[in-house]
Length: 333
Ligand SMILES: Cc1cc2nc3c(=O)[nH]c(=O)nc-3n(C[C@H](O)[C@H](O)[C@H](O)COP(=O)(O)O)c2cc1C
Image (cartoon, rainbow, N blue to C red):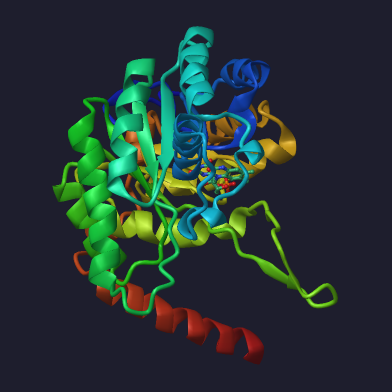
């Protein structure tokens, strides 16, 4: 079965790869991922806070005086990150030497300035592509949707202008008009859109009156939101599309490709079941496709795209009413 795909201009034997996660901190794990057939390795993010913490430390040593501004007092203790900025760059080089598949690094920040220097360093360290992880919760009621979009667009444009490797933008669904933002990122030259980051959702401990920083791993139900937006964008943007969030089985991967994904990233499934799960998902995909008469992945790619319907908005509305109706019918039966 020909599962080959093109993602960020990279020709890959199949679309399955680990998404950004701490799995890649350990070179043995990276080898296991390659042995399981990962078509690329996506690294976890280097966070702006790490870069600022290092710069702050350098400044402190230079001036030999401690300075605490209110803005930086929220910075996490640099010790919580497994790899500092220099170690991250070294890890890019180590992974490059360890595996033959493409290495996609990741940067997370909130201001364009801090991204540019590290985007360049990551490129110099040998990454084949860069994912920018735009994880930002707009909490300022005075900041409107256009300003939030503008920040994302400026970041993407700044990074794109700073490097020559392909740049993918990893997004959340929480924009006032996601399709419009995707179109603008596409026009600004983003090579890929990674759909969607899963936001950390804090819970409240009502006894301790504290915030619980829980990481909930996904299940296949998380995929549905991604399928919808892949299907809306597929065929309407030049950028490659990657899915992240809720891919656990061969069927999940098949749905993602049908909705338009060129790359399929998995994290929760691999954290839960080990890197070898990636090869099981690939086998399930191939087997299903063979049983259903497909000869290649490209035949299937985007087959469920809403662009084929001519009027995605009308189809979405019709489906909405159909779903409500089906629930009433199921109660009658
Ligand atoms: C423990 C953990 C660490 C993660 N670290 C990062 C990260 O550094 N950068 C990033 O863009 N996404 C990060 N993610 C998000 C994942 O890459 C992925 O988008 C998300 O988990 C949804 O995919 P899944 O359903 O396959 O887990 C992390 C997720 C988990 C569970």
